[in-house]
Length: 228
Ligand code: ADP
Ligand code: ADP
Image (cartoon, rainbow, N blue to C red; front, side):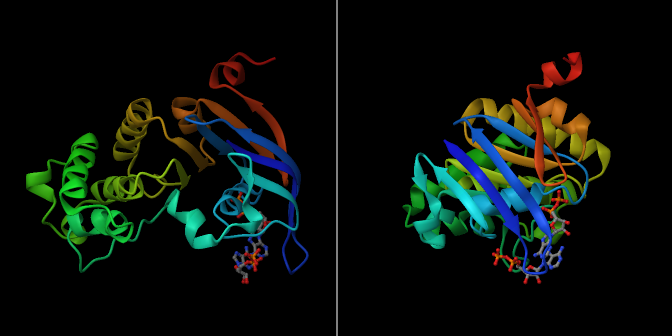
């Protein structure tokens, strides 16, 4: 569903961040991109929603080259979760989550129900939490809301860039479990960037190992643990 063909990215300052990668990300899979800091994980991810444009090569979604697609339209079908999610502080949890469904013109009754359903999925009882403001929630709870917000517009693809890195170890483990469950329930295509191998082994269907702007290996967690 997402394919990279011989993609490179050289930044204006001459940094060759991506040196030619081929990648197929299958529909409904949770794919983790892992590798040391600076190896090109974030650059790879940001090329999928056109936050960064490749220098050469082709990226296609469902067979359609994204270079010709409008960024706004493309991003409607791609949820994005980053390390510090940045909920809008003056909006309640419900308002934050409903933002994208509203923009997309979903009917109020439909998205109200959706918000409740998603909050329940990540263990936030709607009646207790939806009328609160982000700063009244813990970091882990806010990050759960960030994940829910990315899902609320029902995008087929979700990009997650170190989404749990700022959390304490317990919240982090819980969110990994929840994401895995969520993935088994909703079957979204998820591309997840991390530098933490334990996290990758725990949640991934497939692991893409990057090094120095190249893909070094693509394997399942089992294959990585057992070795060649
Ligand atoms: P990772 O996510 O694996 O830590 P990045 O994709 O962020 O790595 O970065 C890959 C390389 O490209 C690094 O050397 C980084 O410094 C460089 N880089 C990233 N963004 C830019 C940019 N906008 N301009 C110049 N160099 C960049
Ligand atoms: P695009 O491919 O979308 O044009 P750019 O290469 O212009 O993206 O990067 C966007 C901006 O991000 C750059 O202007 C740069 O200032 C900034 N930036 C982000 N990360 C880095 C980095 N590691 N080193 C230098 N600049 C960075």
